[in-house]
Amino acid sequence: MSIKYYLDENLTSRINEIVDVLDMGHVDTLRVVAMRSKGSGARRTLARCYALSKIWQLALDTKAHYIIEVISEKFDGLSKDEQDKVLIHELAHIPFSFGGGFKHHGNWVTHDRVEMLYRAYKNKKSIRSEPFL
Image (cartoon, rainbow, N blue to C red; front, side, top):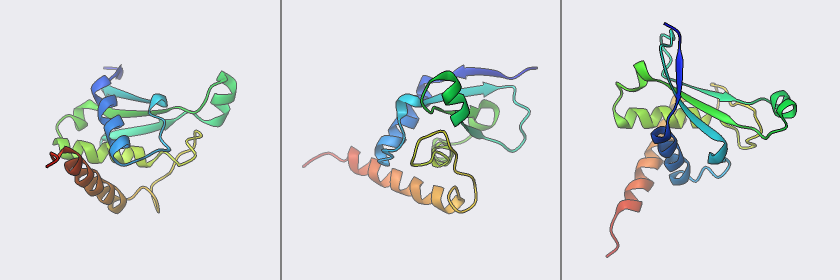
């Protein structure tokens, strides 16, 4: 079976909310596309982040865009909290320049950073949902 890709508006909304709540102002959500794939042969991968590199931007006369792909067979079985962590992880790959580059695992995209961002996301989200007295 070949891999199939689908645009996912629900995923786009979740990504937009994460970007908003975490004040990730460097992420232009109008240029982040959320995709869902089915039929991937990836074994340990839950999601991927792709960047439109500078050479493609010049060739296509466009600005940088990013794609966040979730692999349905792996991602859908996770709890909502774990899915949010995966989305935060993929967003962490997007550099502050939003220029088509990519932050790799190592010193920046780490388990500890994702956990810290996730805790901040949950805290800020709960504060936003508290009613005013």
